Image (cartoon, rainbow, N blue to C red; front, side):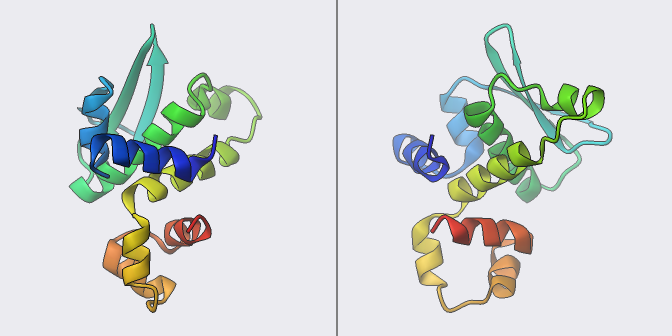
Length: 142
């Protein structure tokens, strides 16, 4: 599945790039809870999609984490990354990069990149509020 295509398809279908609004339309269970050692995670349990987000994160970061976990939901539904990270030697970095890519493709539309095309990566990072590496991922799919 093309990551950007899926993100754009969801944005069109729900007429928003706000991940909270999109998951409401998808009947995903969203829980804001205090988390330790992680910012958010996705779980597929008894045919339910569940996203847990640290209640203590600022709203902007909660939005990113929600979009990131949506990436796992669409791209890695059956992969138990927490189990793989803690119980196996399996490297989950590819999954994390794909979920980051999905999040950035969802949160930042092409028109924003066109509007600010003369900005440097650092300037875009400050303007949009995302780390440099995330802006670089988004620019690769533009």
